[in-house]
Length: 345
Image (cartoon, rainbow, N blue to C red; front, top):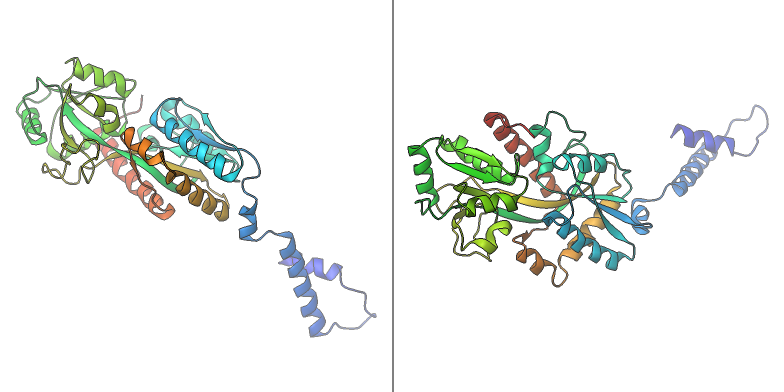
């Protein structure tokens, strides 16, 4: 405002020496200066009117070929078609997603970099001693587009026919059973640790580099228990015994598997999700455009069906709902990590 007043005064016509400007003259100058300044600053709708005016990068903090990458490419294609500018996927894996998420946090807040994140966004800041991003302060949430529940399952040689029977077996023989996951700090790993903490269980974690090898270790009988995304297991349910899914409702592609609440363990729900975010400072009109267009892309024919094939449920929550989810899951998993004394590898 001080600058606006100075500009108005510098542009005012000269007056006779000793003359005082009238109130009307002063108000006219101020109004004119404000109007000129307003003309230099684009209004909020104008900020997004031409968006995007250049290619937009969807940053995936994992290697190509995984579920997050597949979903990113589905959405990128639709956004490119609908907005007339290229949306392209860049994979930046490493350090459990930390490298890519840190790069996204440091990106210019102008809508040209969009992050597609998973629960590692909220898990890693506690799992690792130091990360170069803050999931709450460094990002503006747009929407969660999908999630996949975990499924508890066992090798057929394990006598348990239900999750309750499995818990009873583990209690009766502490440290006898092993459970395999796709890695330390995955949602499947933390879900089992949460169950162990809740019910006083002792079982040994065997982490693998990816869900595929861990699933094969259970099918081969090298480990007895698994907790992984349903999409990982759904095509091999004839080779293992599924006990429960960690969603609130039964999953359409596996309707015979009961929910974890149905089998007597409410509050143990968990899921692996994919959500879009932009760096903090991105103008709200651009966030609004991205939310509207991502929603439109997800509702396009064939997209939802493809997600279900992959074992995911289409979600599309609102930005404020996603923000609340980030805070809640950050606190939940941080508590589990600390109490179970889990460290990133």
